[in-house]
Length: 440
Image 1 (tube, rainbow, N blue to C red):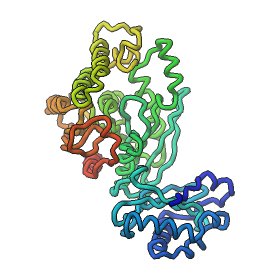
Image 2 (spheres, rainbow, N blue to C red):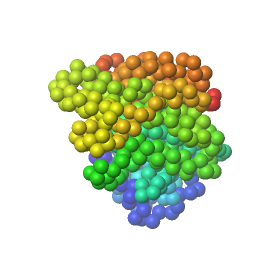
Image 3 (cartoon, rainbow, N blue to C red):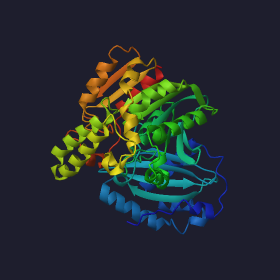
């Protein structure tokens, strides 16, 4: 089957009229109308709804051929559900997950302001990100926001409920390393699941590209010069600038700002709540209670058993982790002697970071969420969080059976390669976060 994948870029070349008078409801209704026409084989009728500039791209016989191949391969059409919606001055785009008898497929369609079709494509659902069913794309819109912190531009996306009024804001603080705004592992995007799931329930959610994603060459230059680099430069400085920038927006409630930290982002969350009075509470997903390097050593020990062919590599990283815990560590220690070649100043900062003590005494709501199959922050971390927070009345802790570090479900031993198996965060996780936020 020939894929109909004309780039949205071409929409601008033809100077289409601005698409401002078209509502979501109208876009969804027109999209469902076209899906119904496909399912009832009204291909000529669809072709007549195509804008004149694109009619040569979407003739009836091509639509008929593609639909026949889809139904011949995947079975009869069963149902359709909107899974993505985008609006710009030039087009209204909506995607449907079409459920066939055997497997789902994605149908994308865009309309101009006159309601004419300007783009159609079919995509294999198992090869791209598909929003889980709990995401209601009719209830929120996304807009790109770039926060500037000195020389660093931090591109982000705000998923904001379409209903009027000021909304509680959740800022996703990502995992260690050059993590992108979606926390991507190919088509798996756990941060996007969180953002769309919570936006569907009335919360504004901001996710962004870490500094290390777009400015790696500058960070390498600083590294070569043995410049200071700590979690403040890596995460906190940019996050605080983001808080300052977003709290003044018209649709954000500045008294209801929450940090949702994942992994290392979660470990830093208690400090953020302590340092920033605007932060009303923190959520810690898969956060380590043990010292970072201790957690890393646990990982290497575990991975040496499940992937023994990499044991030598894990042993080398273990030696670097042990070396980085030295209380007298020289900040000018050569990079190759440190975990992942990251500057010694980073590990010195972490060695001095008393996150359990801060969390224990924090007088703000905390929600610790832990996956039972998380090998990166194993069950020893969960037990340590429980012990630390047992007397803190504002702390909630919950264990999730079957979930791994990304909060994806499984039944076997978790490994890094599992993160690439097509999945979404389960709905009960979104419900728990939403309920906790609503109670604050």
